Length: 175
Image 1 (spheres, helix red, strand yellow):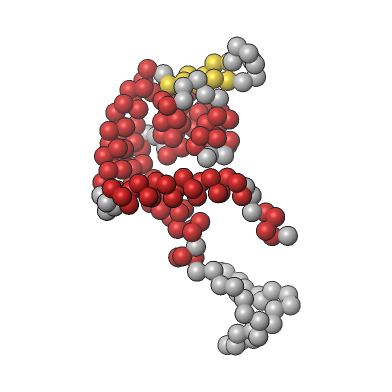
Image 2 (image 1 turned 30 degrees about the horizontal axis):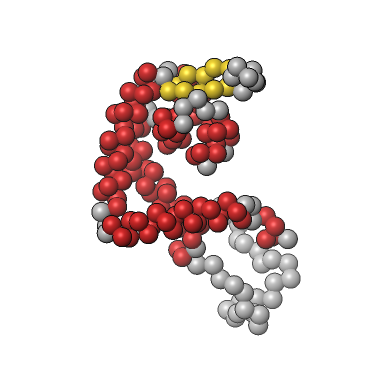
């Protein structure tokens, strides 16, 4: 049983009336971070079915494979940076992919504490099989946009990524 929510200490809101001081309202369905998250989850779930069903891969594991195709001989920290995934998610994905024989792990010659990750031959085969399906899905997803909208959308996503990286953590906003 869920207990009722108690009003915050110092709350001036009275039952059925709005407080004299207007509070900012967050409309979640219009809040950009929420909308981007929902979109990302919806798209990821749709395409994840392909590689989960056929190869038993999670979204994180597929991302690691895709990054290693484009950036071979990467470290776990490189993967975190390129995928935007936290180090724990990368570590779990890497461990699973090594166990499955889809990637290889070796110590770096320069720094024995650093490991270098690469696709195995089987990992390359999986990448080669999944990529055409992923690209077809992307094309179908983008069919709702004309070529100019696609280009503008890509530009806007790049701008938002740069701005988000520049802003960093929003923790200071809470102070």
